Length: 290
Ligand code: SF4
Image (cartoon, rainbow, N blue to C red; front, side):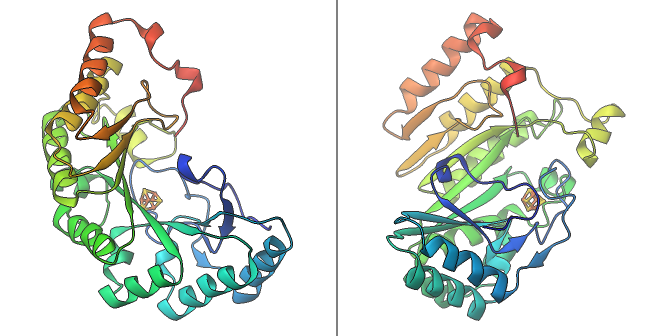
């Protein structure tokens, strides 16, 4: 397999074949995100993609394929269907293909196009919501409103494709933590995804948000306040059936919960940790990563 630059994937795709079909992120403007800053966005050529698919086809059977990099749904429909078809034809045993997507690229697809992608094997879409607060979405340059994000999420779900979303603890800083928590719980409720994860903000040198932090315009809440945000988001969200995790390496406290059935137990666990007020119960700083 030929990869350009660092490859990023969700924790749940750890055992998947990582097939790089795009390089970088088509948006690449979010102020907190260091992921693809060094990469100029492009869709890989058909020959490059086919070569990797044929190579994977010579291996043992592969359960899951994850399309990298940041946003494979930006690929024009005809080509994306062709890529999914080639995966099914040449790679043995594939049961699910997953991809990151941003709301703008989802909204460029019609309901029929998304349904076609599901028929060709697209089995999960990972969408970074980050926050449900419109002012924060504008500040972090996400490029979409909360309403557009909800519409994108619903469109994926209506097409029968499981939806996995992420939100970022701490994104409201010290000043807008309450708005961040309330509106994030609200967008999660409106979207009602099958999977949701919380990440914890890490300020990475070179990003615009890091510069704001350096200049004093942005303050990062302390570790226990970030845990309080996690507890409040879970408490205030209303899911019909969601697997909620905070097992990403950026988090101080990994949790896994079936919601709503394990809501009370999970919130109690988080508050118990907060009450201990002892960093030895949290993931140490040196073990965190974004
Ligand atoms: S957060 Fe997602 S959409 Fe925003 S720049 Fe990073 S990869 Fe692109």
